[in-house]
Length: 50
Image (cartoon, rainbow, N blue to C red; front, side, top):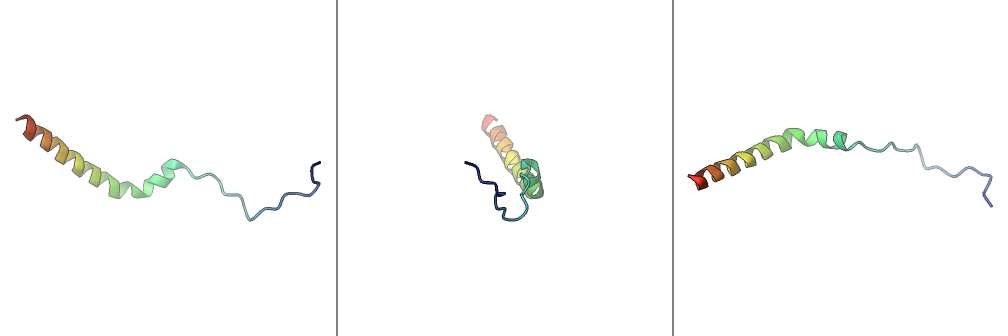
C-alpha cells in the first residue's frame, strides 16, 4: 500500500541544465583553437596538392 506521508526532499529540485548554456563559456577558448587547426589543415592540403 502507498504511504500517506509525503516523500522526504533534500533541498530544492535542480532544473535540468541546458546543453547550449553549458558550452557557451568555453566558446572564446575553443573557437580560436579550432580556427587555427583548420587553417593548418587547409594549408597542409594546399601544399600537398601543389
